[in-house]
Length: 428
Length: 174
Image (cartoon, rainbow over all chains, first blue to last red; front, side, top):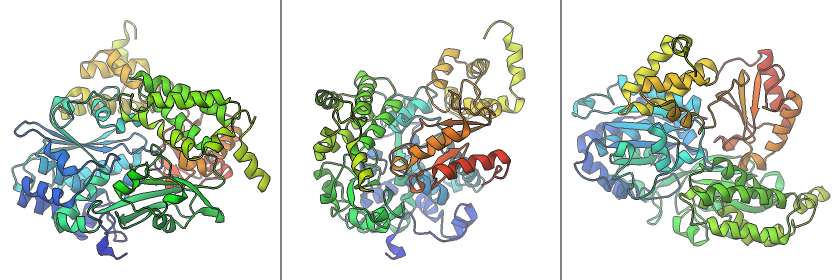
């Protein structure tokens, strides 16, 4: 793929991109200058033309989200969701580490387009070195006059604050993020009102993901239509996919949406490792439903993946080879959700507890068939009944894997050990 | 937490830490937003959050100590007891799990002779295995020691990393 097909990684290989001077030399911050010239409405029009959809997982159209801000209600805020913690997802880390100024330029373009007084970057606590890198980059940007009082003579004032979380997956949920940023426990809020109407400090607020905003410099510089044309009509633009798990060369790969298949991504990552066979994948990170070999030729298109019963989620493809015990993978994920449940609602707090206890018995070959049925019943009672998506998604991998590989789950019942592991070990 | 602590309290936090907390309280549209950054400032200085430090934050931000403790107890990265000199987070989530993370943790447990809290007898490492996906799945299995990640590990190489940190061969770098 030629460089002109790339957006997020188009400067890859150029020197010193993590410094303001290096990024400016590559052409950086020209889009911000242009944004200040054309004004908020024209920026919003370009974003609309780009067809850009949120890259945090929900894929909501960015321009539509922005349009929900009530007119003439100020102050309003921009909160950037840099709380990347979806299992299997590491693209925002790459974008912040390798292209911090491209990201900040995107943040400032959005902040200006929305006319906010404060832009906050909420970055997860574990990303400490990345937080410090962003703080340094933000200081550079402030000294250059790209943020602060009367930015480049435009009359617009804005402060940029990098805010570190402290270890809570739930803070990736946008309303929990707002509570956390307000200095509270990170627990989700009841919607409506949505953040666009009543968000941070009760004021109109937009919450956007790191990758979403990192696209803005390109969109403003090259035009929304150019961006859209890189992908397909239904899935415009490009996306930075993470590929991990049982592949030869895990990593991030920027590819056009809609025109690329899962098999292409798998090939870019060197194929299934150790000469083994493909068994299954999670197309969008730990929360998303399992897909099988029959889905490898699906395009990276929102609708195609939804029709197959899953989602591109946060853009994280996790590949599993034929030695993988899906009961073990499900147990690992359920343990994670149990640990990360914020405790606000009963179906999630209690459901993940019982789910995890049963998964451990099943994995060890101790559960009865009745207990497996109970697990399915608990999941059915959680999905759609939790306060926020964390609880719902805590059931999606388990139940989709059970549906796709029922014999694998059932063979664990009263087997006394893991039959998949036994079989793999016997074959070696 | 009892009478007479007040004078002692401000004496234990450095003036520069207090000044940082006050500056953050002024910078946010609402001072309460400075709770997480204030707790980080204290933990960076003391290694953990002693009960009196919760009262310092509450007093500085004009909150009740309970408001602050509700926050500090919610987030898994704040310590209410002093951990080892280095905090080691071993990722056991799906991508790391698929590539041998359980092996990394069991090797570390055995080689580093951890106590119930996951701390070494020498007190130099606290090893945690219940952490979120650490967002480095491209280098799975991985662990994070303080703020640095070590990737593409095996059980043996993970132990080697900690031994090199212990001997000073790997210092504060990167």
